Length: 475
Image 1 (cartoon, helix red, strand yellow):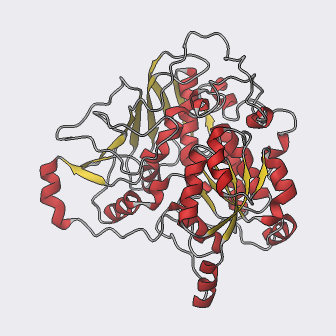
Image 2: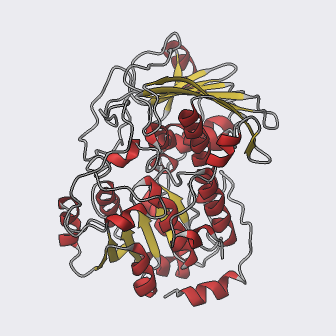
């Protein structure tokens, strides 16, 4: 069992700066006997977050038959949303505070799955890596740009730890198709991308004229409401923050962009080597206010040339009534087959479903969300090219298996913090533009805004609450 003491000793011997190239997805220097032994051993795992989306993650991990559930942690263990999982694993150690779980029980597990509100991802992931644990974290990985800098650097310093962000499309068909089509020159010279999420599944009905954050409801019995905040400033309890409602508040969530951007833009961002944008402009906001995300918004991200690749603009559309323009020959809107349900219900197909449109020099592509593959449009062009398209390799493992194999040293994770973290930083820049309702210019080298001091202050967000400062150190 890896203890924190042994881990810290091992870090000194580990090679730093491990490169994770998109095409180099496997790392297997083991003998066949060692590989067989690794496959037979179950990964001892703790789950921080038990109900709702966390329950789905637990079910997916269980399907692999590669885990042993050691500990379950949730600030609201008595909530109805947690009872199914708790009854399934009666022998797992239970905690309400993840800090106590690590301090008291870290010697008993080697990996952690993090599925809690967005504002808590950073704190749990940072503590997990400091204790030498492999980490799977739901997206978005971070809520502030600075959190991304710290987690990316922490992962680079500990290359022996597997990290994975839960954008499952990185282990499904779209990931492998995009790379194969790019290598074959089918996808090339991309100058513009439209990404859109116009479903009503994630939208709230709060009053945009409010003058203060809501409060006044009774805290659920035995819920650790203080720990729920992590390092974020304390708010009196409201039902409008719990059970997924946290997503729409700037203090807690990353809105539709952070929620869905990872499922729509991950392959575009990675394989086009986009990195960080030089301009982020809020083009449209319906009911802009200082507390929660607009009902609808349009954000333009502009990326410079990268090597032989031309400059590229990404335009993001969200909101029920904020539909993007569609190119001629677009056809019907497809629906991602692997969109998970939430406590808000199953996804209902709309006229325009979550997706993306990719504009290359010679070809235009459309795609749905998650792992859905791209199609060439118009249909007549796709039909004419179908016999010349390259064969797309099959995924050797789904996202959860990929993580567990990486814990054993058999594969590399496809969405490690070093890759997914930069994409999430792009979303953080977009959120700053949303909050300030303005146009921002950003230097990807210095990682500072060049035209707005308020925006620079927002890169790190509010100082952490007392007692949470040490999470922002790499030691």
